[in-house]
Length: 119
Image (cartoon, rainbow, N blue to C red; front, side, top):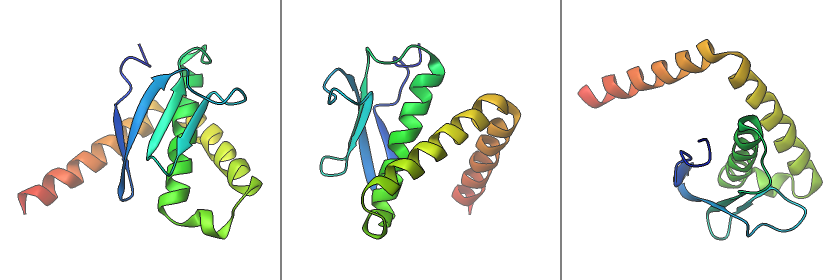
């Protein structure tokens, strides 16, 4: 269900990033972000649990954040991968283990967006 319900686009900074579920990923990866093409590819055969899928999507979204915020110019290379991996692992755990927190974040953002649209 998780891969089937994955949005086809995610807005990250100034980019609308296309999200594709396929098997066109380099052999050593289970997912990949392409800044040049504004795309995230998720390997449909490489994920075994919903947590794996969510973690990979968060991981690639963080790569997109790194690129769109221009952090990639400050920290090219291996540090980006390590930073993104640590943050994706932590956020996946926080989201999984704290559904009330995630609901609160979603509600707070929706409430803010609704009040801004009314003004």
